[in-house]
Length: 358
Image (cartoon, rainbow, N blue to C red; front, side, top):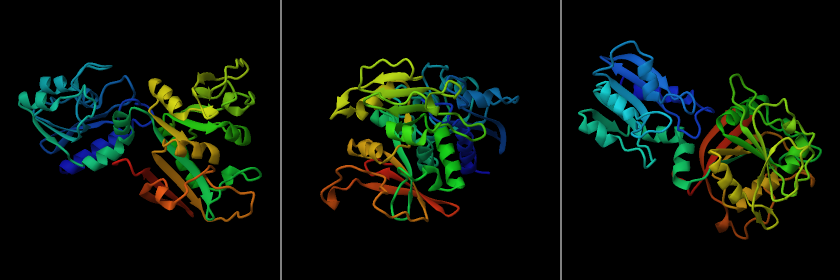
């Protein structure tokens, strides 16, 4: 094994923290001495040991003289845990290999480690590390949750509506991946119409999955209180975002009173409030109206589009976005395709807004 192999291992370990470490980043650590791995760890949950401390705590060997591989710069300040940089110095680690510097201004450990005589290398598999923690890096730059739209459509560009069952467009393999997405994102958001029509639970139904926080946008606050999402025996937390001043004790959800914008919930204000609640990523699984509302507000950072080889046709079918749209092609909302993946006969396209660098 070489440096790249050990860093890939650290990143694989980091992924085990998905769904549990937010608002912190995903971080893994591998300790190596004389070509042998002597310790491994990762950030397992928010408030728990950071990856470096976790790795050191899980080895019975003396780590003096070892090399530490870590996908993110070790912390140098006190938070939920003491500084990892101090621990590396104390334990006489010889070399530290890092993929990405931490954009948090509180973190500045490189000079500190080098002044203590530790060799530090930065930038190994940096692009891969940036993708691993795209939510964290986005949060640091834009100071709001990353918003991803997910929808399934047919070959003729139509989504389920009215008489069509939304669960029947994509296949079982696609839906299983969607549950993995729900596990990874802090929150899942739908509009009132989707909640009323589909009556979804919005849970991550995979083994070991963590249910996201659930958010319903209902400007007028006249939603049916008997929906599945409000049942007391469901897991997770449910919020309802509204501009209404109504009080409805029969709705089993915490209410977020948002600003009004053009007669609807101000989505920018809602995201600011969610960010203050430590919600760092939002998966929008609504219909064409809520999708378009986020698009027109300039708040769509990522899209997961599932395409099924079916054709609905007909005037009663609708596209994934319904709104005013643009007047000319040059004004179209621009996205960059980052990944194309197949799930059986379905195709998934993952695309990022072009204003982003990742």
